Length: 479
Image (spheres, rainbow, N blue to C red):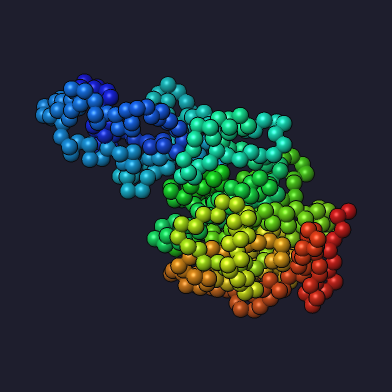
């Protein structure tokens, strides 16, 4: 501090000077903790820029002498004075712990310090601030809570004091933690992270809104993303984020790797026997309603005992989507809004699948080709594979799961015209045949090839064998 200008608090400019000073220090790291430290400014009558309009010494900090340069501080000494200039930033990881990440464009050869294997006074001096207590993002609901509560609104709508007080009276916190043992479905996706298409961004924001609503019905949403912006948006909607995942050389995520990762981090949290749970990848522009949870709960009631007893290996559920043009700025805040909006669209063709729901353990992902998401052909291959598996039942739930595709500027066949790896999934090696996949491996890859289909009758979800596809299969009795 002897080498710092004699700044006065509560006056302008010194904050930016201090940040700029740290930005240029090679021997020190600067961390932007905006995402994990809540700092609430209680604005009084002096407003939000009080430091710019105070008293006779208002310009003190812009006229003070820099003891290093022996000159008055200058404007260039706070050019890098924003939180965005920090070399690192924090975020919450999937276990509600603080994680650190390098900020692109600010690394300058820096890396995260490693925790020493043996902690001594000397090694602790070498690795300051790397031992952190487990941090909890928000308190859990009370034990007698009958159902999860709605979070405090995070939308741009002005929140009144009455809103906050009313929420405080009925809730223990702005978020609730979905109990692992009550999860029906782990639903995961990826986003287009650097799109300049405003309609695509609008679609993905509505996907997050729908995911937040689905948590109330036992669906745990996940986003595989390395984007700082989408990570923040996801966590604001109670969507867990996975930032470390495998990709092909073009940077496109591997499908099987995501299924394995979700299974690895969620298995073993509820004792023995493990709950009957579903895992599903879905394209990042598909919005669901409660009909997804209602259908899966009904599937579980019919198939769980058959799978546990070994009479069936598992079940795969697919369905057709409804395409609706997504306008910029669209906000679908409820299931009713989604249902009404879907009436503007049309059901798409039977050979385009956007979600792949499996009961856990239904497939061995080591025996599935290394498909990547967002590229053509893998959807039909997966359906074809399930169609020919004698112990895996394939269900077409188009009639009872509303899946709305928010069509952006890339249209309704985006997977057929993407990037340098557009043909990856039609050239990849089949680990079973030891040969590249071929057209004969997806000839039975439409939703019409499902062994069973669902139907809604008098408010109840029913299952029917599909003629010419089910052959000797029957809907199992849960006994």
